[in-house]
Image (cartoon, rainbow, N blue to C red; front, top):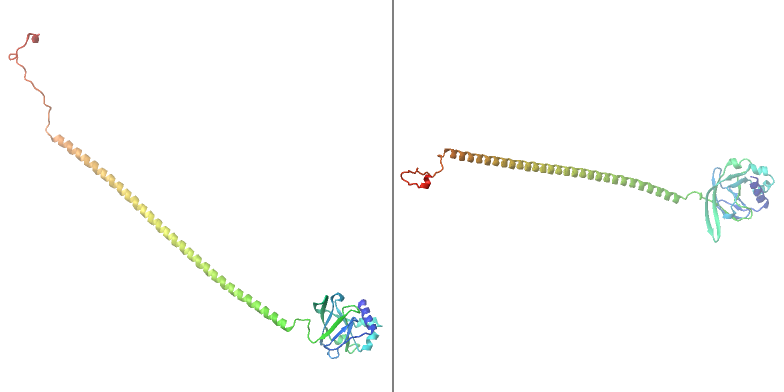
Length: 283
């Protein structure tokens, strides 16, 4: 804190002031600027932006205090205790960068709300001394803006809202499309499953019917084979029966036929009286 107090005292003692008015712009090299806040009421927000070289930036916060008039600023330089009791700070709302030539600059936005509690004890709150975030002797440009340029502009907010709405609508449309698509796919899958099951059942039924036909044909062929075999057996039996009957008839015919005897050469006995015998025959 003492370092900031010493910087403020150095600015005050230099007696070089840049007086910034409402919605005005001032350039300074003294490390600070004096703002006339007389046109702002208690509770109003005062918007500022400061441009400076990026390498000259040396403070995280903006420090400020109120005085009654410019003469009182010099008197504050001799009293550190008085300065400590009236010193306040605020942070930055936005930081951006840009380049001009070979030099890189930064723009920092900040807001100071005019409060009776910060100026009403010992001052009227007309003059506001703002300590800039850079060393004495460095260039800076300070502007009191009518709108809070540290926040998104209205058109950007509208664009963001439209984009968000479009994204949400797109997500809803995609979800509806996806749900409809999933239903269609499910219906197609169910139909395909039903068709596959129906086809499988029909194939099974056809195979079953064909198997039954094959089985009936096999049974029929087997029955025909059995019937042919039975007929062969029956024909064989009939044939055997006919043969037996023929044999029986032949035997019976043979039995019934007159007996025949074989012819023999019968010679009547020779009468000795009729035939002469020789002496050799007698012998």
